Length: 259
Ligand code: ADP
Image (tube, rainbow, N blue to C red; front, side, top):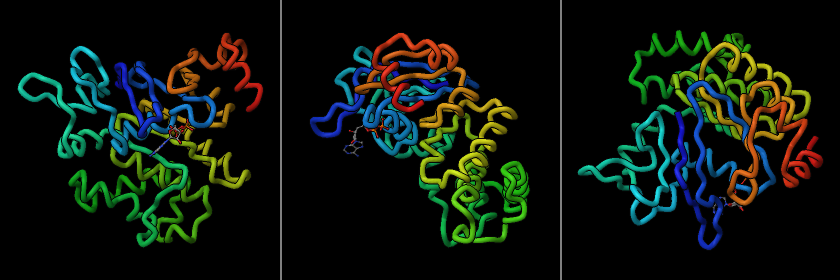
């Protein structure tokens, strides 16, 4: 579903991802853990096309390409060669990817229902009726069927985040990216949001890539945990093995600090 092939990403002199390679299978749930600044969010932002990879001279030979569903994603083919993707290509391809952010990012001037229908109508080209039917189903799934007529400001942070999850799923993405989705929430609201995500994980086959500090959630929903440090994968494996018998000292230190 996703492949990073020797991807570099720098901000000025700061190298954030260093020849990073990994693959995620269709339907797989992968959690990225690691110290702050290790490049986890940058990976999600590249997949949302909010950042661009640092180009390499010859992508065929040197890599530096992100692939989605077997097709280039950060790049496109032009006369049989891989070249950095243009805006039009990225716009089309990123509709396959949904993201939920730390800070919800709902449209404050739109009621809950319209937050979930807007992109369906204007980006996916669905009819208003079709979009509303889908939105109501999803708002029901996240436990907010009663709140469709409210503005986001009238909802708790946890409820806003559940709307954001419904909004991301409404576009039928193949990949759902979750960036620290509970870290802006009061502790008593975290459990509801995690329960909704457990339901989503249990009831769909969507591929999930999560950055989280919630190790309990990581343990419950992930098929694989990847530990990052300095823009590289230090260690990866199934959650049971990663949490109970981490092999690398950096993973052991990190887990000791967060568990
Ligand atoms: P993590 O999610 O693991 O905490 P990030 O991917 O957010 O790490 O960031 C990795 C590094 O890149 C950090 O040192 C961060 O300050 C830096 N960084 C991220 N985005 C930018 C940016 N737009 N401009 C400059 N530096 C950035």
